[in-house]
Length: 240
Image 1 (cartoon, rainbow, N blue to C red):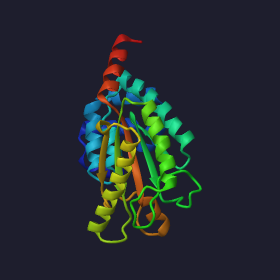
Image 2 (image 1 turned 45 degrees about the vertical axis):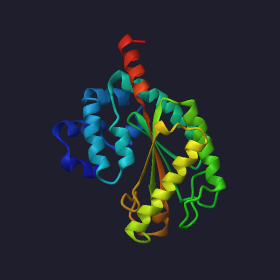
Image 3 (image 1 turned 45 degrees about the horizontal axis):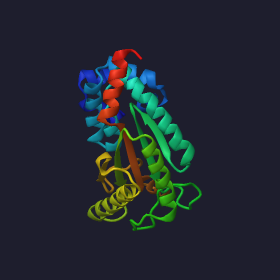
């Protein structure tokens, strides 16, 4: 979060102080997250944070934080996201799952490419969906269908081996392959956004093979759609 402070307004800084850090956000419960976002201005502050984070090295995190509505309604959404995140953790052991704000970030990288964990992996320089990846994606599809009132962002990323242009094209092929597979399994295209960034958004420095494996990844951002937000706001207003 260090890089965010340079361009935040005073309101954005207040939100950072209130939440402390991304790790703090992840570890709070849904009521605390919703109340904190509401106290600092809800969607306005969420958008400030989302834009600043997204313009740096984490657009998937920016997509989640940018959709925050906050308050009691945010807590209601957070409760639903808590259940969905727990289900992903339990059913897909190869997934790295983070609950952030009112959404979920799911990451599959090449740290365990031997198939010891269910995940979404690609062979070197390939974009074909492997049998192991299909297993993980099928589980994801089942969960997405169980929680239909969400929008899904799929992002593709690579390490720094090769040229920028080549890596960008490779990440595009991989992200599109994942998105197309989800659609072929019944996920509505209207729920999906697909983006790719090549080597431009490393999670860690590309200074070792282990780090490069972490940067070769597919990420999902799961956020509330308009229907879920409207229902949460109505429920919050009714006091139920």
